[in-house]
Image (cartoon, rainbow, N blue to C red):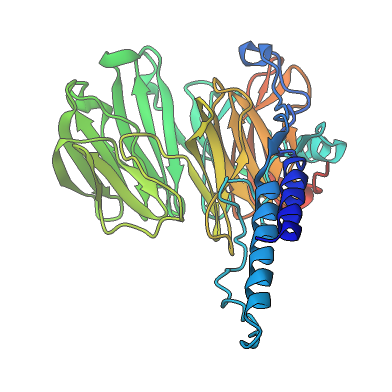
Length: 444
């Protein structure tokens, strides 16, 4: 090697050794929602901090390799004058268009959904819409369900015994069922849960508390007012009966002993026919994307075929599934590794995304967040008992809390209608019905 080439190589090595590039690694940011109530979860600082910058020699190494390769090629060509230089053809491109969400789970800038990026106070326009949507009821109310057309189902503790009330999107109310006077002498008589489909309102009546409680399963025809009894409270408490589910005019439920051994039943409300669907070590039935399922041992049983699940969603039939959707947009809660911690985050996927993105990462591993409703651009979350609205167009969030004494404790949505359960320390729990189109967008 000539002395001139040696000098050039030594100069390249010295220059490369001095090259150091400061490359900061961006960290996700999330702000604590404005107005969040004080509580045990709020003793922690709810924010993310940026990671320190990372210094790397990768660029210097690449530069050195290119310099040496260029010198070697130049020396080779200079020593072979009889061989004409050939143009170097670039290799064929194997790159793919960038996906809508990155492999890290953070939405890309052009994704159809945006992760929580800031917290803003509850806008005055939202407060006015919620106040205007208040429903006049005869007593404290518990929000049970929302139907496909936006009707809400509520249990109202009205005298003398309590009643089941249907609330239409225009806030008109209709009493579907009153707890009978024959049950008035029982301790802790109440309506437990309920669900709606297009034709029926299904609900449970509970007497007592704990393992000895009695649970009956009833339904009322929305058009006829006819009452059906799938399981009477008179059937006793020899078996444990979790909350049933309703789908397309059929009720599904599980009865089991203390060891989990029992049966799954269905009851056709129109025909009045009860069937035994399965026996063994079974979990309570659930409904997912229009299909009924339950756990049997370590597997999942579908009553009439499994639905097409959104990419990235994993079903565990032994656990409560929190999956909400509006059209082809889906959101669910999931455990995600974050350094040494596992956090219960909220993920979303919407067309044309190829994989789900994390849209709400709780700042603390102790916090758990789950989606409770999704309508249009608004995703409503239950964050440790606080209802938070995320505008997925901008990443802005707000706590649905009018004041320290008036807070939203539950939310459901369907057909562009949002039903809110409001906890009021002055007048007890109540319900408001709001059209999502009445709520202006949130902005950071």
